[in-house]
Image 1 (cartoon, rainbow, N blue to C red):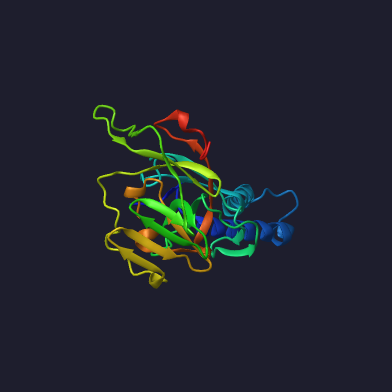
Image 2: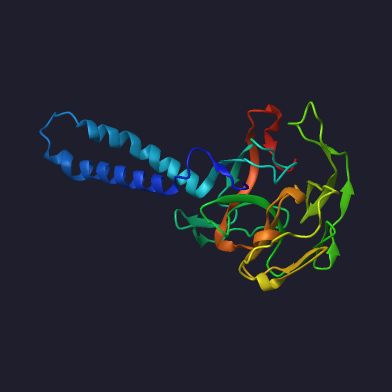
Length: 274
């Protein structure tokens, strides 16, 4: 599985309903019911309950909907940038202010940039959240051939570094070739496994499928307007746009900016691209 694990539960709608119901109950008491109670009478238990929880629900709903949202990384498709078990913070406003629940953008802020690590709703099933790196912007012509990435005719440099050692394979070490890559001014590491094939097996039937050409060496795509081409940093172990297509702008959730916890590795705290 590639989808992200949310902190707790995917509860945007639940928070909205809780905020709305407790807010209505609190307002009804303040502006109507309280005036009907005898002077000096204690507030009913339910009034105290709603008065206590309404600001909490409202604050969490606002914070989660417009500012930041926590996620947990459950898979290895973004290794070595993100490890399994990382808890990350996602900036919800950097790509624009969106109405919660319906995810409709109402204020433009910034657009995704090549190299950003972005959370988005998985196009084949928008109930799931995915995280990948932005590789292709609207209008870009991408070629991924023999594990080399070319964007608009310019081949992206891959500089070999020390091999990556899987931290979960202490007693049976596994090493994977690691490379430095720079996209849009963002330098990051990627993993490439020589034994894995370059071609894409069983690409899906996705919107704008005609924009992509698959062959034995890889894939070539032109990114349609209002869409993005996403890839995992663990290139040979990532189900991404090569397989299921482009990410429409309305599916964007936010930009991943910070690792704040990993219970198995306390040194993981910090920026994604430090």
